[in-house]
Image (cartoon, rainbow, N blue to C red; front, side, top):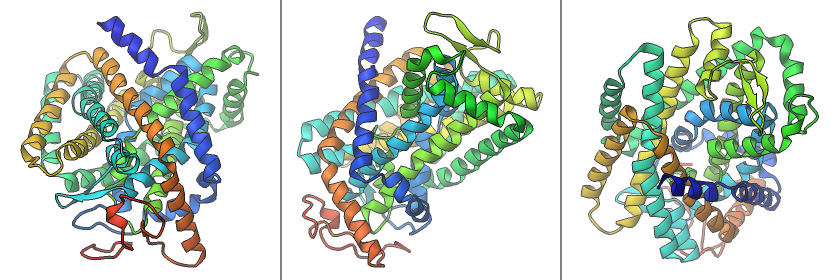
Length: 485
């Protein structure tokens, strides 16, 4: 069984997946005329415009919710693993996929806004909704929804709680069972409070922890400031195969950099659109731009913070494809959070293990919150028009159980099963947004035309000839929306 699971993961996350993600991102970059550069000022500006309403959350709250899913253990462990097997050049390719992937994030999040619905008093949307309403393939939408529900409620929470439990045990000697109970209690208080409480926590915790993490990396860079030219030279030379030590693994640098970049920033995976659909905005492109910027925050800021801490202190090992050690600076330390711990310890002795454990706690805990929201959205999709309260309650207890189990048990199999769930999501979503890109491109053109006229863009799907976008069939009007923009 484990051999079969391993082979399935290998198929789903094969090099074909990497090239497909790159190809889709590059295509969307061209079709949007590289909006990730042209409209970067709009991305930042739209983050702080508008407000929440009785049905939706603000743009910033939706950004924080999507970042809580994006910024997780992958930013610490994933970046370290990329360097361990792809060398320092992998960092450059992580930056590249973030730049290209921002356009994919725009397309999928704009589609989520275009085809969102108001259901049970709240905005709901995401890939399942835009697949059914935009393409008309309900069976395909149900398949995506089931894959997401399985991955987010059962398979993935335990991976995050396992990272938290092991980090706290290593740093403070805290028993994993105690950690598991604490996580369940804290998580229950939040998810039983509904989406408003989830985004309320995310909008404060995610920025605070990300800023603290980035600041620490800047301190470490500052204490090793003379190494700036050498580190950047190492990254770029390794990325293009001209470094004497790492030049022979350029293929691994590209592969691991792209793979870990995609896994971390989730552009095109279909996770971000769930949060994007919940935003209260007057035009879908507004939230699409905000979500595109979230890819930059995840990879260009948080992942880069990890990479800089590791590279500026030389706290890494790199293994070649044949098992030869190309760099062996940390004898006996496995690729993962240990690299970041060692980096911090080298500059601030006695601080590394505890800081990384705390960072892992906040990053991973908010990720579990985001998993719940995505799972809840797909339960709402599957049970539209029916009383879903019982199903939602069952979902909460299932996720809490998975969280506790992951904290007290090994999560190796859960990682593999989670990769299967996510892999199915990625393939289904990438195919869907390729087919359905036209409405998002129309929305972008409409947004830019209105901006040129000096207007605050508002959306009318009927005027643009976009069908089945019932929420937008008449020009957006502020009804009971509080401070909506």
